[in-house]
Amino acid sequence: MYAPSLLDPAAEELKLADVIGHGATGVAREARTLLGERFSSVTFMYVLMRAFEVEYNAARDASRWHEFHGGPYALSDADLEALLAPWLDR
Image (cartoon, rainbow, N blue to C red; front, side, top):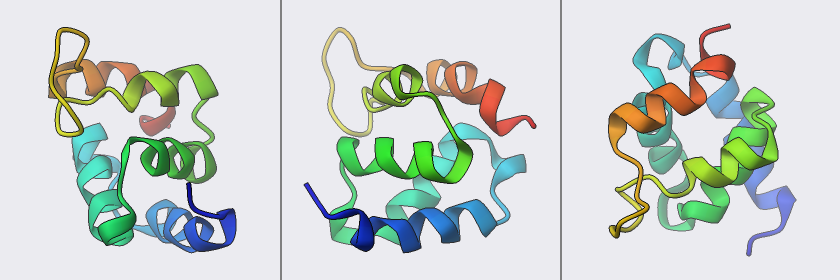
């Protein structure tokens, strides 16, 4: 796990980036770009909570996005969009 001081700048950049109209998958891909090698399901959770005030349980569920890992519980792009819509459609 990375220290917040290493992740907060990426969360702030994500918050300021023009990604809201790009949906949750656009936000996730922008987070991947900003975090680089630090991008993981855990760091994605953290920046979602910091940048968009996503609740912990929703951020945890978002960390199951299919681009992190597969399996029967992986979220599709459509699932991710629906899950994060309450925070990203503000």
